[in-house]
Image 1: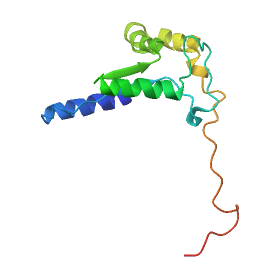
Image 2: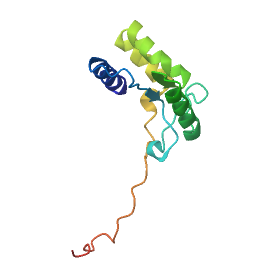
Image 3: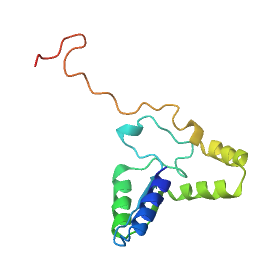
Image 4: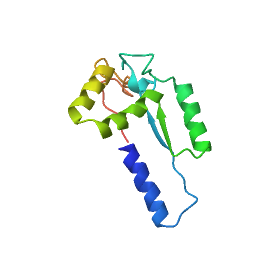
Length: 126
């Protein structure tokens, strides 16, 4: 979705004659933040969960260099190639082998914040 959103923004700016507007589409694998708590990867050396500092550094560098697209880690570049060359059944098998289909099995996400007042208690009157 991000790739096509980026493309639509780029083309809209071109149509409007806004040549100085640039975009950088960032396509990371999972980043080790609370948002992806519990996510696992089958092949951590090949498809690692990204450290936030590393991801931020790469993103800032890509934006500063006017890089149109940043895909992290390097092996994720294979996904569009697989989809373009092979039929869906083979692409699905490859994604399964990489463990992409199971990555969210232990997903917990960020813990919900505690309620501002005890559950069942009435809120402050206005």
